[in-house]
Amino acid sequence: MTTYTVTWHQQALDELTEVWTAAGRRKAVADSVNRIDRALRIDPAAKGVDFYGDRLLVVLPLAIVYTVRDQDRTVEILSVTASQE
Image (cartoon, rainbow, N blue to C red; front, side):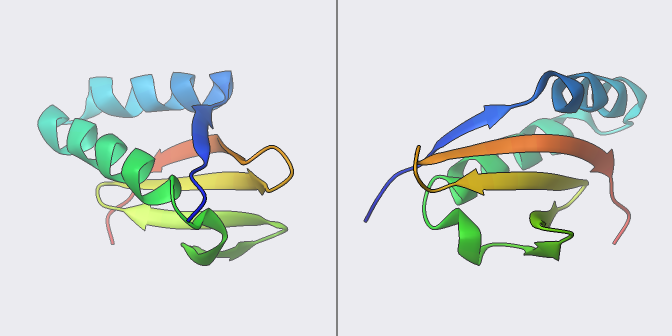
């Protein structure tokens, strides 16, 4: 089992800050971030769904778009939005 390193693009961090600031339940946002980081460490290409060549994953109350770089064993989170699903 190979472990991947999860990184956050600056744009995604900025978007996360906006979502967290506007959230009524900030702990839910923080918990979602922790679940995302844990989930994407193992077999990230099998998580979420294809999204224009990247991956889309919903972990309420967040939805993220990320890319997997197998050669580097890294995952980069590219964008974050609040999700109501």
